[in-house]
Structure formats: C-alpha cells, structure tokens
Amino acid sequence: MKRHAKMIKKTFIYLCLAIWALIVLFPFYWMLLTSIKSYSSYNREYIPKFFTTSPTFSNFAEAFTSVPLARYLANTLIFTLVTTALMLVVITLAAFAFARLDFRGKDLVFTLFLALMMIPNELVIITNFVTITNLNMRNTFTGLILPSVTSVFYIYLLKENFAQVGDDLYKAAKVDGTSDLRYLTKVLIPICKPTMITIVILKVIECWNSFVWPRLITDKQEYFLVSNGIQQIRESGFGRENIPAMMAAVVIISLPLIVLFIAFHNKIMEGVATGGTKG
Image (tube, rainbow, N blue to C red):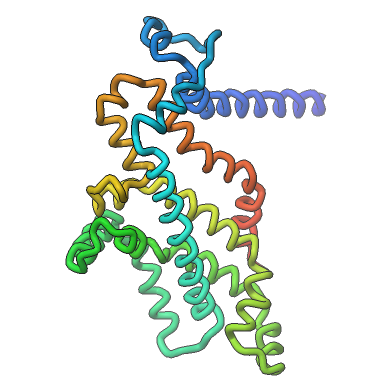
C-alpha cells in the first residue's frame, strides 16, 4: 500500500512538472512557429493555429536584409566577450584579495562592498550615465562596457568559493616560495573552475540580454546591441507589420543563449552547488 502511494505521489509530481514545462516552453514554441509562417498565411489566420502545413524559412533571410541584424549581433558579441573577460579578471583579483590577503580594514571594506547590493540598480544607472556622459563616452564601446566590468555578487560568490580552500594549502605554497599570483592561477582557479564557468555563463547571458544601459547610452545604430535592435524593429513599420519576420529575428537572437544553456546547464548547477557548499 505504501509503495502504491509513493508511486501515485511520484506520478502526480512528474505530471505537474510536465504541465509546468509545457507552460514555460509554449512561448518559445509559438515564437518558432510564427517565424516559419509566411506573411500571407499569418495574416489569413483569424483564429491562431498551433501548427503550419507550409513552413517557410524566407523570414530568416528577410530579418537580415530588412534590418542590420548582422551588425547588431556583431556588436553584441564584441560587447559580451570583452565585458566578460574584463569582469573575470576584476572579480578574480578582488575575490582573492578578500579571501586570502590580510590588510587593515578588510572586513569593513567587504561589508561596505556588500552593502552596495542594497542600492537600487536605477540609482547606479543614473550615476553611471552622468559619469559616462561627462567623460564623452556616449556612443562608444568603452561607454557600453566600462560600467559592467565588475559585480559585487560575483565577487562575493567567488570569494566564498576561494575561502573554502584550506588555509594549510595556502601556507604550504607560501613556504615553498609561491607568489600570490601563481597560487591564484595554479591552485585556486583550477579548484574553483566550476564556479568560474558558472559566472562566465551567467555574465554572457546578462550581457546578451542587456537592454536598459545600452538603450540609454547609445542612440546611434552602429552601436546598437541585439536588444536595442529588436526594439527598433518592433517600433519600425517592419516589426509592426511583418510579425513572422520579426519573430524570425527573435529566434536568431535567442538561439545562441539557448544553445549555451543546453550545452552548459550541468556546469551551472555544479558551480552553484559548489559555491553554496561549505568545506
């Protein structure tokens, strides 16, 4: 009897999860379905259909020819790679300093650092906008990238991960004459690799989806990212009239992140679990 109760409970849980998965995935299905419908067939549908018998891929070609989608993708790729690389250097050095180095006021500085997470993001954006504008960095990649090269949360996450590595290992390395930088690159980074991979993936997703800051700091098309490009497409006649082609553009933009998450979702879970485990 108990065995049947467990089986029924397990079946019910999986059924609920399956229903929830369908609810979550339906918008992606609808986006993909709309992107392969022709403009004429889409407009003839007074009642939306959940399938199509005559798929077409011409919308994807039109998405590239009607708007500078390739430029938006290239800009976003540059922004994402440079920002992620710079941020990784900054947070790694900062996390190592807070986790292993001894200096006066370290705990106070770290506490104040964490307090920055309490500040609303809107206030930070306003400050960054004024600073970048005063430095004449609007409509430049430097202005886009500079405010995003650090993260208090990622520093905290990596610092806690570094702190889990025993002090004995650090002391032994110092006795052998190993420099702090060599200890960081040869010992800590390889040990904490899952967390660092997780941070990189999350930062890439964050940069790719960035909207408010690029929208605020750029008003020239040659510096638009994909998020701004999609907004421009939606606001233009092309986006309002040719919905299938716009959905094709959204599919193209979303595909890299979907592939990235599918390829590295195990690493993300491993990194989060490692970062949250003490000892």
